[in-house]
Length: 141
Image 1 (cartoon, helix red, strand yellow):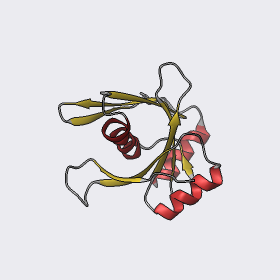
Image 2 (cartoon, rainbow, N blue to C red; image 1 turned 30 degrees about the vertical axis):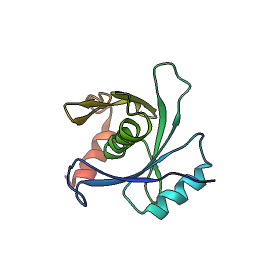
Image 3 (cartoon, rainbow, N blue to C red; image 1 turned 90 degrees about the vertical axis):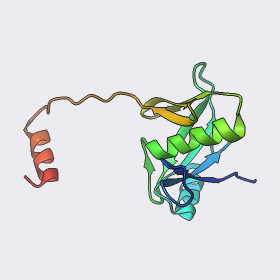
């Protein structure tokens, strides 16, 4: 099986700058271990994989892998995936919607740029002393 792989530099219009991500458009999901191996081989901070979605308001389902683990959200790899869809796979579209573990994500072509829309995750008060202690420890307080 041939797997297309694009390496895209996000957040830049200059070659060899920005934030690189690998992007693998797929017809169907590969086994998780195989996607993890591909991400490890790419050795970039993230490799995005996406497949056509069966949801009515979503174009693709997306997942991201670092060289070591799968992550729940990655902005630059989503933007890179949007670029691949809007410039290579479906250039007639102006917007693409992805479904992820973190919710609906969209990339829109606007004024010769790509705009990324992420779900809102508002701050919340800490629930108990254990959460307060964990935050204090993380901050070195």
